[in-house]
Length: 97
Image (cartoon, rainbow, N blue to C red; front, top):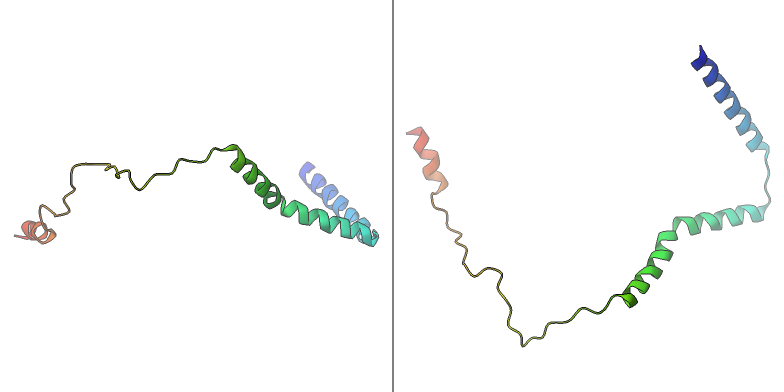
């Protein structure tokens, strides 16, 4: 019973609130300011993100560049064999025989 009463009062309050909002009339400059605020809020990460990326570029030192005269270093000196030890056809034939 308490849940029914709580739901009734919440729905009644929402209905009355929407009736009040429907009759509310705001001047045009308020709508323009609201639209500008929404535009800035939705693009905030683009505006501030570009500013911070410029600041980070100034703070971080430039990475050293490799000269063409330095020989490239190999990660592994052992060659990798790409041949299979046992072909798939032989594995498939052996259980059937």
